[in-house]
Image (tube, rainbow, N blue to C red; front, side, top):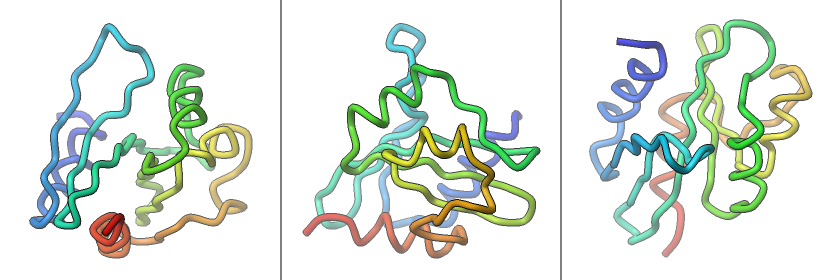
Length: 121
C-alpha cells in the first residue's frame, strides 16, 4: 500500500460521518483522489498528498483542476507528523512555496475532518 493509500485509510477511519468515494481516473488528468459527501448534503473533493520535503508535488493538471474549481476542493497534506488541509485555490502556492510558510484551513487530521464535516448547510 502506497503512502497516499495509507493517508486515505487514516482519513476514512477518522471520518465516519463522511461518505468517501475513491476516484481512480486515468482519462481525466488532475481529477482529485476522493469525493466526499457530508451530513449537510455537501459534496467536495480532496487531493491527497504525502510530502517528504518542505514542498508539495502536484502535476500541472492537478493545480489546474483546483484553480478551475476553487469552491469545495481541498488538498490534504501529510507532512512530518502533521496533517494540513488547504483550500484548492492554494494549490499553486503549495507547489511554489514551503509548507511552513502557508496557512492551512486545518492543521490536524481531526480538525480537517471537522472542517469538511461542517461544509454547506
